[in-house]
Image 1 (tube, rainbow, N blue to C red):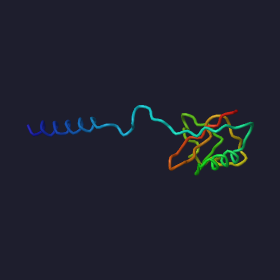
Image 2: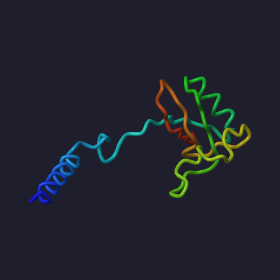
Image 3: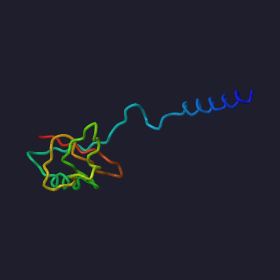
Image 4: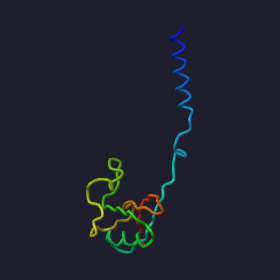
Length: 109
């Protein structure tokens, strides 16, 4: 009988743990985005200066596109913050404003 009480206690505690709300606010969460208009070919140095002028800091840019295998290329020891690298349309890296990390997207005007 003791075995059944222990099993029941473990089962009840596991069920209670599963019933707790998830830490995320939902299945999909909002991501903060900094969308920047770029005219022609702009370097990462120019984009970083534009973001700094708009109040962003800790700007980390990369010419590498994110993929399923490499979703955060800005974290890799590869080419980041290369001042001569061109800015491409789409995701270019991350920055911080007001303590919040934002994804940097460039769009052609």
